[in-house]
Length: 323
Image 1 (cartoon, one colour):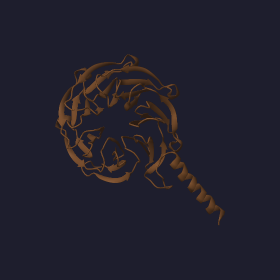
Image 2: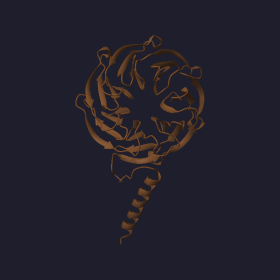
Image 3: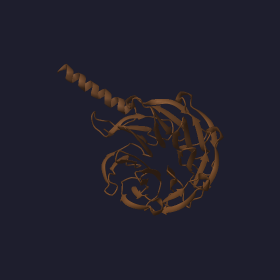
Image 4: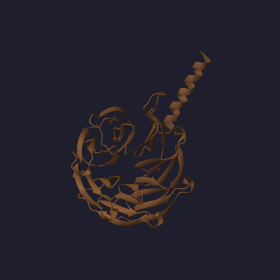
């Protein structure tokens, strides 16, 4: 047999073996989109954000996992920061990671530099933090039974709650754009909250969505993309916010848990159905263009460049090559 052919077959076997060892699906070289690499974690990979050369993963009982993703094909855990509760949501801003801890409140972790990451402050929120976003000098926490909790984080070590906005449902996620916060509130749909100024925050509009606004809310180009649980993806025109309305609903096969939008495409983590890649340009004519199955339960997604990073519950962090 030709030596080059033998060598090629051996390389192929090694690639498949490596993929299996790392817990990932077998990926045929050149097949995209597809799972390219898996980072196993000790907890329940619940939420992920990307900042620079690192993926920051809220890992349930495993705390904060900082994963070096430069390059993605050799990603590895770089630093772990233990917490006492259950890490469900995360955001990163200005050298700090903010963890929504379902049991303990909001943790603020100094990650500058990542290798010396350490907890600097915990703020008890009164509810059960599911997720959060940081905008300017404030952290906005979706606090499940307590609605939206707004925390002054300037400076982070002196962070303090300035207001709680009660909601009728179960607050699961929040996004902030300009003077408004968009709160996914479970069966009560999406609330639009005027947060200018934050200390006088008030709900001005509620959109009744057909499913469970489980979480995963993002703002792009005058629209909100909402992961609506058993009713898939909802696209909502928010220009102006007081007249917001659903313009498109797309049923999916799983349970939509999170969303990221980049370059005219929505990337939706869809529970047992993995990652759904959806063309949302224009938002009035939406269609699924691809699906990447994941082995466990896709809870969160973040996209950076040619890669998608999926928090896949007990199966860890899945790194998916998009192009």
